[in-house]
Length: 156
Image (cartoon, rainbow, N blue to C red):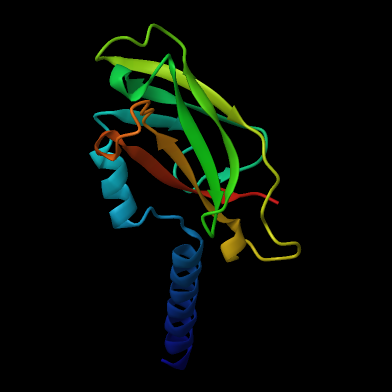
């Protein structure tokens, strides 16, 4: 009987330990961010990087956006650190004819200095940032502004 209790105790301890480790290390997109991404799915779809993906410089972004998201075959992409500081800006460029209501593939490249503090752990706040895909708005009128923000993580 005593041996059975030890086996049950060890098994339960192992299951709890694995569960704790799994919950700490899994990267799940928070519901509000997931809803934001889904709400923009009819306008812009990001193929890479995926939300919460660890990135480094140079970063290539790819996806597709509806023609009205572009102006003159491009739209701005912005990379920010955890505090909202812009660390890179450039343009995504249409890979096909953009003057359509259909989805048009795009690609862009960003070069940046990593904002990660030296010697910090993998869950440190300085590893977090956002990649922002802005609808090009040459009018400057705020009612035509739109953007898709996806959370990313910075590698060392």
